[in-house]
Length: 103
Ligand code: FES
Image (cartoon, rainbow, N blue to C red; front, side):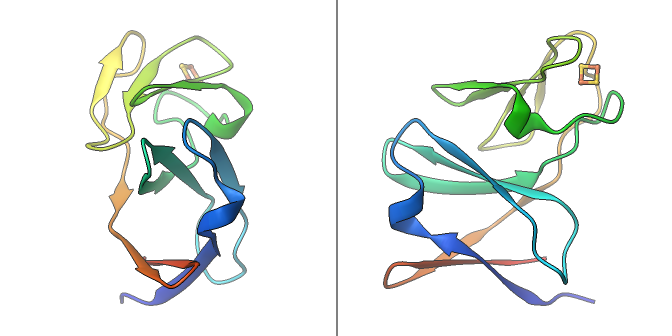
C-alpha cells in the first residue's frame, strides 16, 4: 500500500544538506537537497543497520558512518564497497514549501 507522507519543509534542507525524517506512518527516511532539487531515500544503510544521516553527504553521494559505503541519493545505487544492494528511493513532490513522498 502506498501512502503520501509529509517529509519536511523545503526551507529546512538547504542545498548540500540532508535531513533525518521520522514520520510515524513511514520507515526511517532521509531527504537530500542536491543543488535545489530534493530526493528522498530510506535512511537505513543496506549493508547493515546504520542511519545514513549520521554520515556524510557531498554532491549526490551519501557515505555511511559505519563502514564508509556510499550511495547515489538520486538513484539509490550503491557506489562503493561494502554496500552492494541499492538504497530504496522515493519520488519527492513539492507543494509550496512542503515536501511529500509516496511511501
Ligand atoms: S553499515 Fe553502512 S557500510 Fe556498513
